[in-house]
Length: 500
Image 1 (cartoon, rainbow, N blue to C red):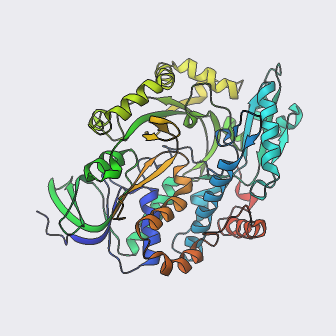
Image 2: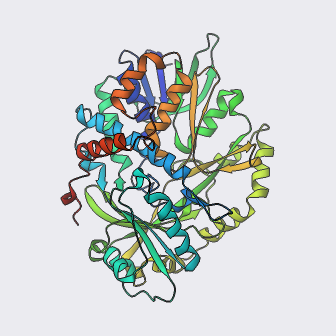
Image 3: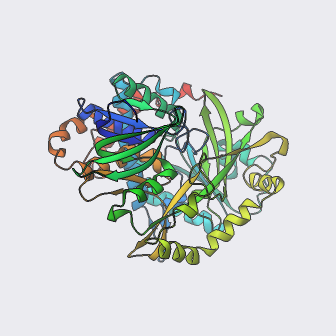
C-alpha cells in the first residue's frame, strides 16, 4: 500500500488537453482544492493531444465542409458551423487569459495564424461551395472569407495544388485568413507546467485500473504505480475521466447508469509527411476537401501546413485505418473488452448499420504506399513518392449509443460528456472537434457537475472567458472586439510570424 496521502478533492485521469483545461479552470476558480492527476505514460499530451496525433486545426468550421450540410431543398445548414466557431472562440479567450496572466508564455509555440481553405472539384461541388460561401460570409464569425473559381486566382492562393493540374473540370476554393494551426501537444505541456507550479500533484507512469463508489459517495480510484509495481488507492469527491480512447473502459468500471448502452468504435489514422523543404515552402494553408462517399467525417482529406517544434511542416491525410486498440499505447483486447451485456445489442446494431464504414476502413488498411501517393496527387498533381513519409496518427474512439433520431447503435461523430446524475464523476468520449473546443466542453463539465457553485463562479468565468453565456452571432460588436484582442494577445495579428 502507498504511504502517500490518499484523500483529495479532485482526481483527473489522463494528462491530455481536456484534463489540463479542467484542472487549470478549477485552480482559477477554487485555488484551495487539492487536485491529483494520473497518467499512464511518461509525460503530458502524449496520446490524442500530441501534435503528431491530431490535425492541429483550430477547428472553427472555417474550412471543414462536413459542418455545413446541404439540406434536401438545397439550402446550406450553417447552424453546426456557427456553434463550433463560437466554441473555438471560448478556447481562444481562455488561452489569451492564461497568456495575459503570465500563467503560460510564448503563445507562438502553440498557436500560429494560418489561412483555412476549402477546395472542391466538379460542377455540383463548386455550386455547393458557392452556396456555402454565400450562407457563411454574411455572418460576422466568418468575416473576410473569399470565394474563387478562377484558376489564376487559385494559382495565387494554392501554387503547390494548382501546378501541373489538368483543368478538365470546374474547381473552386474558399479562403479565410483568420484560421489557425494549433500545437495541442505544446499547449497541453505548457498548461501542465503551470498546474505543477500551482501544487497540483501530477503522477506520470500511473495506470488507473479500477474506479468504485465508496459508502460515503466518494470515488475510490485504484492506481498502479508502473515504476514501483505497487497498487495505490486514492479517493476523491469528484473524478474526471479524460483518458482519450481509454475513457470508455474506465467509465464502464464506474457502474453508473449513464455508462450503460454505450459502445466505442476505434478508428486509427495515418498521415503522409513531406520531407522536402522546397515543397513545404510552396504551401501555406490548411486546405480541406470533401470526404469520399462512405467515408467517416473524420477522414476528410486535407493538406496542412503545420508548425511543430517551431518548424514548418506539411502533412496530408488522414488515411483511416482500423486497430482494436482504444489508445495508441493500448491493448489489442480493448475493443473486445469494451463489449458488455448492457451494450452488446447497441454494438451489434451499429455493426449492421455501418457495413459501409467497415468496408471503407478495410479498403483504407489495404492501401499500398503507391495508392496513398495517388490520393496525395489528387491534391498535389506533381507530388513525388520520395518526398513523402508515413506517420501513424492517434487512435480515435467514436461513440456508439442509442439515440431517438438514429435508433439503436448509432455512431456519433463528435465529443460527448457523460456524467453521473449527482455530478460526482464525468467522462469525455469521442473525437473531433475535441481539443479545439476543450474550454467549451470543460465549462459544460463544470455546469453539469458543480451546479451549486456556478452562481459564485460566474463572474470569475466571465473574467477568463468574456463571451461566456453570450451569443457572439447575436453580438457582432462583442465578437469583433474579442477576436481582435485575442488575436493581439496570441500573436495572431502579427503576419510576419508566418514565414517559411
